[in-house]
Image 1 (tube, one colour):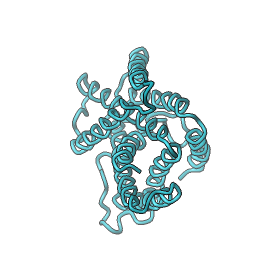
Image 2: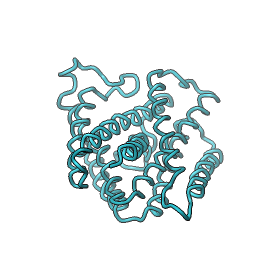
Image 3: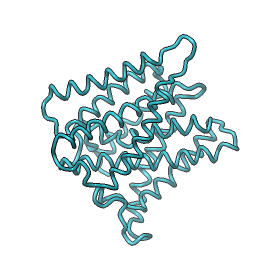
Length: 283
């Protein structure tokens, strides 16, 4: 882990935490929408769209969809975001399809119109539900911001646990078996297990701090583990896009980390799962 990477993380993490805990939901939605659109801009690069006008049009369409969802969820009788809930569920369904895509590595791998269209649809299906899920978690009372922070911490813990467990134990327990060698050769089963262990610890600590009833602790841990597994799917799917397009990073905006999409790929898959699981089990 390079010094530049660590320094960048020390700047980004406090900024993200402050935004989650201090901003009202509406302002956080605006800030996260801008972040999501930037990630989509980088996504279009991975899809080999070089015409900036076309990229702006695609971003405008996604922004219009976000605005339409906000408008459609407005109600004088309720503070809920019903359309956002539907979109979050659709987001979970999309990531299950993405898992099938990962299992068929060559699907849409050749340059061409159909492959490009499929990947552009995938971009919207990944980004918009994650944005809706973020708003749902943060908006929920009580303690919405703290639940959203827990969701972020789970993904960060999974990434950290995977990094150190992969370096320390990689190849010793499972004979060097890679998690997805064609998509991301550096990811190991040991790393995944290390991420799950550290995320479980974070989930238990978070549940205790948020006064979750004892009988729902198992549900919190279960949702946390599934969230982490989906975060890995999100990471792998972006790696798949980068493999198809022959690039190492989605961008160069963040020193030591690549682009915005490189930093949020796991969250795109994790947030809808966490939001749906939290609503399903009622914690």
